[in-house]
Image 1 (cartoon, rainbow over the protein chains, first blue to last red):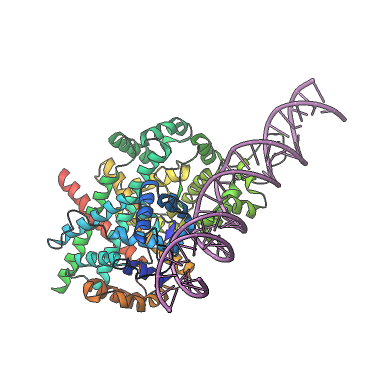
Image 2 (cartoon, rainbow over the protein chains, first blue to last red; image 1 turned 180 degrees about the vertical axis):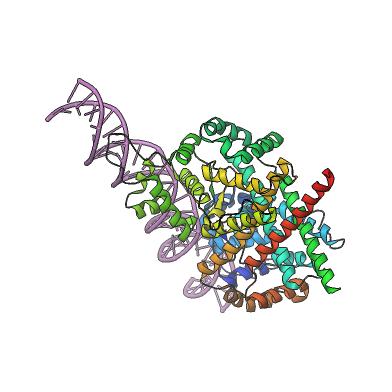
Length: 262
Length: 262
DNA sequence: CTTGAACTCTCTACGGCGTAAGGTAATCTG
DNA sequence: CAGATTACCTTACGCCGTAGAGAGTTCAAG
């Protein structure tokens, strides 16, 4: 999960950066040298680094290097790394997906689309999984996203509190499930070993030490999963199964609420 | 950054450390000074630091300091930080809980107990959330845990693959849900601000910038949630709701499998 | 008892991090 | 032109994991 924290900087400065950035790149005759950079360009460079090399590789020096300046000159545009990450977050929340999630249709289709949208965003920007977002950034795009997700469960007979809870549950699940998938993919890249190769390197050592009769179910199921996937897991399939289970459970809840009220 | 990786070190050395540690603290007449430390003590110290100060504060220097030696002497006992974390993981997987999760009873009770057990472990050791575990450590305790979780869904008419998927889904969900709760609690400590205070610091600034009519549902539900909890969320309640939804969905799946074969 | 191997532990050093402090050069308003 | 303001730079601090080399301790063998 976490390495960095959202909404960790000065609130006033952060909110200005988030909401004001849009219109105001004009600067009426200010003294001093022309800026060589823009906040926008800095954020874009930072996202590219985080996307391709991971959040651990995102440093002020790396961003600056990519832009042809020194690390300290970034501080002219952005108060610090924390605020930079805030803006990165709100920017990727604002990415439009195709096709857009349907606003009409049944709630199940809406929630499926939302879950898959969020999954796709995590896959595009795996570093999102490592940013602690319990304190929301409160940028325009993040707010719009929250609003959209709530609308998907509005008018189903759930209380406002339950709506908020359901949206949380779904996004918690998506986070957890995608995290597993992303970690697995990254492990392959980082170690230069596929899951299968990795297991094969351990199998002979493990045999000497692991008493098969002590863990019968793990041995049986592990072998079955390994035979099916050529590795230990199929994250995409697990994702869809979990989504189905949650939505089936939600269906029961909505039905119960509907029975209650009449 | 603070994301660490499990099973990142030399497999042979790691597996020895994990499986061999138990019986063999005896050393038949070896030359050289008596060791002042044990692997066990190092792991215990490391866990204490991670528990109380977070994974970011866990450094070889800090562990060594707590044990009264220099950082480099730890490398006599442990090949590196990666392997140390492996052993930390397997050790906390081995913690016994009271009461033990029931092995009998209905599957629903078993899975609830497992989910709550795992939640409790994450709450005791929040740094677990920051360790990427897609490559399992393959220690005795981790293996036992996997076996126990699979047994909880054995004999319900699910295929071996489905059993593995269900266990993954549940643990993915638990991870995601607890992560939200832990982040929220840590945010309060880290910033010395309760959620309520944090919101109050932003409310006046946000009002100027956020068009309420543009985000009607978010505004309404956010206000309701804020009024109910004095903050934005109730993580424990969300956890239980999500668990219920998943188990209800699983019930439907088991029913379907039973209808098929019956 | 002496010697040499094995072992524990220490010190120093490298290149990385975020950013505080302070200097220099460019560009505006008067 | 002067003076204010801005952009950018260099330097520095205390952290990190761990490589390398060396000092001191304890054993078995000669």
